[in-house]
Length: 245
Image (cartoon, rainbow, N blue to C red; front, side, top):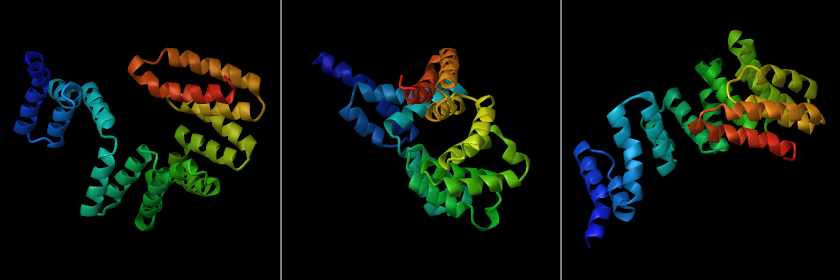
């Protein structure tokens, strides 16, 4: 009996904090059904960011909340759009849908954002282009990217070059894709651009070049901090799979 009481003590203390601070009541249900696990989530999602207040702590808290309730941002964005149907709120819903891999939903929201007064907004155009790329609608994505490029300096960003490379690859325009991938791989932060270029080279028969690129990606992966390595490894694995490794 004393052990049973002690096992619920963290939930009790966290529950008191929930009530006193006016937080979401679903925490109380979680504490009841998972008295050991839920307080740990609550600590990282709520208490630690409160105590430290810094950017790192906020990041830890957001990650914990996402793990516990991955659709939270999507629901909040949908509610905000229902209450106030602005372009800004629609953009947030499109981004939340993309984070869940709901690309059809994301594309629909971006397509509505890009109409009228916002037809030349580079952020909206890129959001729509990226959703179209994920859906394999290469020609439509390329049209949006050409609109971004026509705006001037906004179209010169390495991230735009990466999107162009993906569209060209999808359309079989391999020479143009290679040039855009090569430019983006050296300039886009993280491992995505390099990994996509390795996969492209492997696909087009340049396996020796792809192997050299993979070795560089693995070198860069080894230097990435532990908490950030999980996402980076996804891109490394994509490149390795393209080479059959």
